[in-house]
Length: 259
Image (tube, rainbow, N blue to C red; front, top):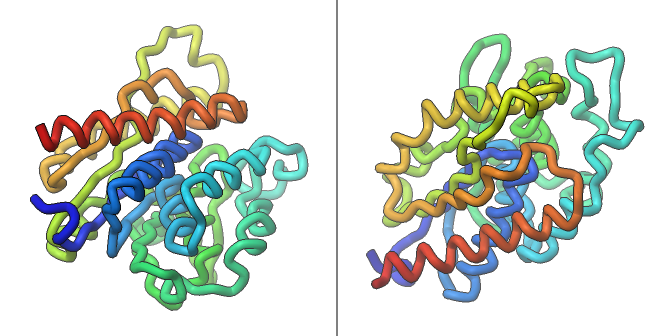
């Protein structure tokens, strides 16, 4: 596998704040001059993919995540089916993407979401606004309200496809998968809030249905250290750590790949 000659496809799993590890991986890949031609991403992976394809550097992606306080009181809703209004995050993304569509990005990006009414996976086409696709893909059920596009209600892409390797199968010569949702070792006392229970259920569901997809990839980067972090980390110090873990795991894994 020649990662410098082959066309490279990147697959980014969901994982909430742990998705920052994707940006750390991108930083390492840039240093090795490994450039993807396509990226498929779900949820946090979709956010990182869109920002990167929109021209943001890995360090700038880290700063973007740190600039949003997820649990700001202004984001809460009592009128929609979620604790937090997914529309509240439009402001942050509009400042970067404006009215850009997926087709306007610098590389081909595939963003997934779940059509809640039809019960089907949606892969957004190039005419969809980036902001809409990203917010639909990352509307974590039970925490964020479903996101509406053209009368259709969408929720997190991870419900049906947390690790969308199959979308790039056959489209690129080499596939690199980055999976940032290793199962946490927890105790009963860790499941004391709605958020922690929802997050745990989601992690278990996705692990069960996604690890077999590792076989589709030529190279899988799975930072197991991320198991000690939650889905919704708000500490900037922890965000820095997650980013660094992504970088270090990619580096170590690359050395093993080439040994």
